[in-house]
Length: 402
Ligand SMILES: Nc1nc2c(c(=O)[nH]1)N[C@H]1C(S)=C(S)[C@@H](COP(=O)(O)OP(=O)(O)OC[C@H]3O[C@@H](n4cnc5c(N)ncnc54)[C@H](O)[C@@H]3O)O[C@H]1N2
Ligand code: MOO
Image (cartoon, rainbow, N blue to C red; front, side, top):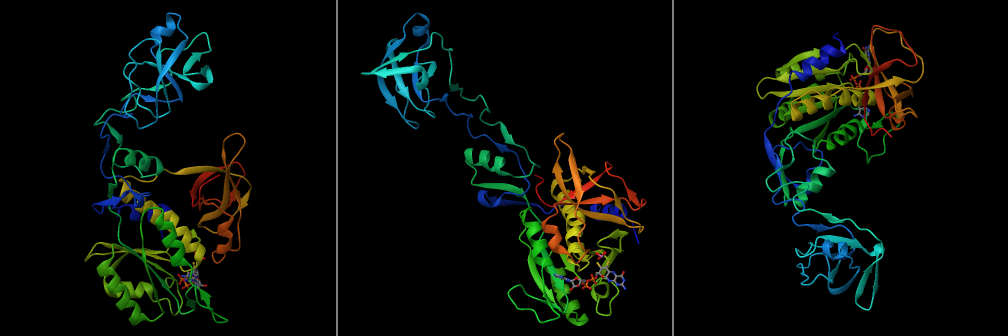
């Protein structure tokens, strides 16, 4: 049996790229940007009025003029209307392009308007006030987002504003998730008395969606011949084959044997960890496809997804390992087996700004109801039995920490 660190290293050594794809803007969130996004014109593209009010020439105000005749009114999107005399102003709205003949905007709150005249009420106003200058944020041709970053709502926002209805993103691997087990029925079926509904493929598929991956799913019964045939078909089509169940020591745990017969090289089987001990990982030399065969227990498959599959995906798409997160253990924990223990925790931000992880242990690797209350696994090292409150350990969040 190998350690978690050794297993992680073997997996990350198999990080790889999958090319580049053009992705529609509304499907791009979660993907990784494959090229710099450039501003197609200055941002903002014109001197943009930032307050509803009037535009004047500051010089006139500085010389003592405070009442101005409203020459015209502009809405955002209108062509600018110029003033031709110092005692004129333009009434205009936020988002208007500032008329070149004016240089200062006075907001409505500082103006009284009566019978076509606008009178500025404060004694002092600032020259150039309430104008977002052309090109102040970015110049045409500047990069507004750099290749390699995750496409999030902020990237989508700026990409839309520079006219990109699609974005070049790093291509994601083709993934299939295969559940195994005769006791499993699909989610829309009523299970027999000794059956359960399958949930692992739904959970892993959901986790992968955050990365822009739409994984295929399959189910196989515990029949060695059918498994060989179906896994063989998947190895020919997919870059990553994820299996759940059938990897421990039971009479019907055919997965490792089926993979071996198919020529998938076993890179490890069994990791010194709980949950997830019987995790099997290998590579199919003929295509380079990777096989993550997770234990069937729902918490085991879930933990292995977040501790191994997601970091592998991150390393493949970003070209670097994910940066580890740490938190403070909020209560004493004893765990005696010589295994790395992935404690389920609820991490919160304390009053002093620390990430604190409170244990929510649950009832072992079959208790996936407990994952709803937890938001991370805390990785407690295998060489210690006692883990003191206040100790700092690595965490693997699977939800937003709030
Ligand atoms: N003699 C031993 N028995 C077991 C060992 C061991 O070392 N020696 N390891 C235990 C550990 S640890 C785990 S974890 C499990 C993993 O076993 P398998 O990967 O072979 O998984 P199954 O036996 O097929 O299923 C385990 C459990 O999970 C349920 N399951 C399976 N697939 C799904 C799914 N898609 N959705 C929901 N639930 C699923 C299944 O019904 C079983 O209850 O082995 C221990 N045994
Ligand atoms: O490793 Mo198993 O996942 O402990 O139950």
